[in-house]
Length: 134
Image (cartoon, rainbow, N blue to C red; front, top):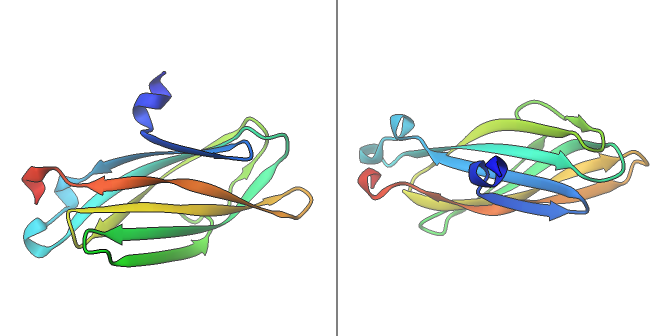
């Protein structure tokens, strides 16, 4: 059950599971300058029956003031992983915010073997700095 402890958030779309673990990084945050930073670890697991390739990502990042930032791009951290059934892909990225609290959620668009698209949900997860970092 290590996975449940490591990854606090998960969403499943048509057999594809997206798990997210998030951690606040005090050493890269500067509250006095209005900058807080989190690192998040994502694991994408292909529990389906066909090969899929991650093509694009869409993030909705919201800060404590309700400011929403949409981030769209190709792949994840410069990669467009191809996942055979039973395979998984892990990557780590980061998110700066101008407030000590916020949230992230979104979706990945995959291409199936037949060329059709599959939109896979990224679970909602909070970004919360400890009170000592406010």
